[in-house]
Length: 135
Image (cartoon, rainbow, N blue to C red; front, top):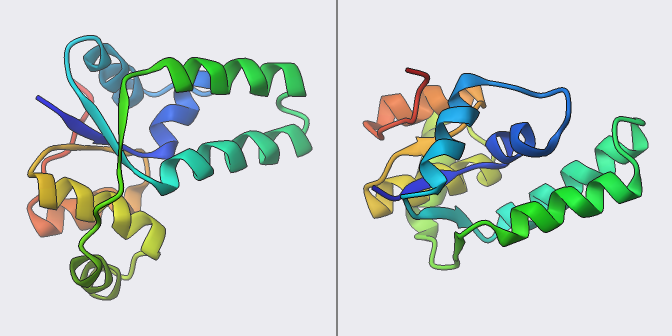
């Protein structure tokens, strides 16, 4: 079954000191399931690498390898957000528009969301969206 992935999950896949059972479960599903992300995911991942380079957690070589790994994953980028739903979710659940984009995608496609963001997960539950959770 396809699922939506957010940047917090991908971060666990590529940052050397990040591990989480939800991220591991999502990674195991990549082999057999389609993965979907909103267009902003591409930018969020690159920002994540730059921020971690600046903090000294990664160097340029590590960032380049991490992005290469992610770019080879079968993630489909969705560019067809429902702007009205996105804004409604952001307002009703007090989410950033960026986080609401992941929830909007999961609701619109009726597929589970994989996230480590607690506020986003809470909003997803409140909206009746399925989540990929640890076993």
